[in-house]
Length: 108
Image 1 (tube, rainbow, N blue to C red):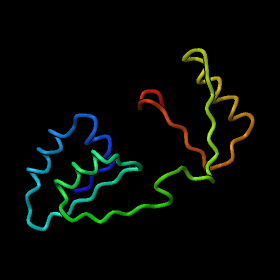
Image 2: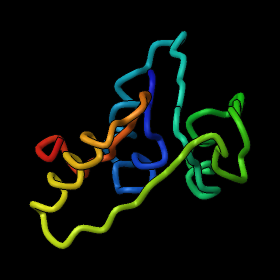
Image 3: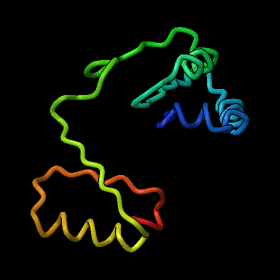
Image 4: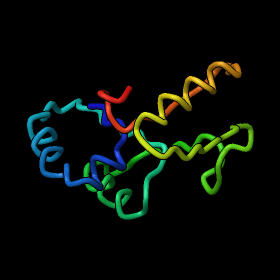
C-alpha cells in the first residue's frame, strides 16, 4: 500500500478514509509506504500507528529549502492576470526544468 502526500492525507481529515483502506488491506505480507515532502511531528506520530517500525529516509536537508532551486512569486490583480503572467514568462524564455503549481486540475 503506497500513500503519497501523506502529510495531507493525515492532516486534512482523511484519517477515517485511510483507516477504512487499511482495514481492507489485511494480507499478512502487506507492505506500507508513506511519501511526503514534509511530515509535521503530529502527522509522523499518526503514521507510526500504522507502521510500527518505519524506515525514515530524508533526501536533502530536513531543515531548509534546496539552495539550487530558483523560486519566483508573482502577484497578479485578477484571475486573467495569471494567464497573462504565464504568457509573459514563456515569452521571456523558460529554461527547463520548470514546475508550476496550480490550485486544481481545472486551473491547470
